[in-house]
Image (cartoon, rainbow, N blue to C red; front, side, top):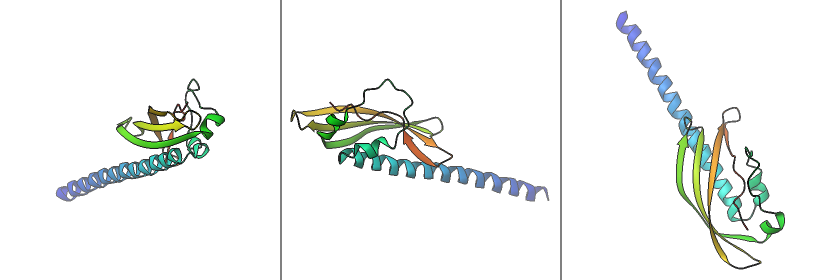
Length: 135
């Protein structure tokens, strides 16, 4: 009888561990989907859609004007690094974006440091940093 209780306890522990691993895997999948969608929006100059994916936590960041954004053409978007913190509920992503402004036709490279957070209630990711600092 004692061995049976140990087996049930062990099985319950394994199931809880498996559920946690599946939950982290789902977070990862939805993060990947969210960041790819955001990247697509930035690449195709759908800045209004990209901006709808964010919840700004700090208001002291540069935000490009609508007139500037109308002239921006992104030529490259590459993820340089990804670092998860806070039990994988916050992810820091560093992206290199190469673009030009149709007004100047000068190729510019910028590093965009993004912070993504997981909303457990909605089971989705959102970005907390502003649009890239296009000029």
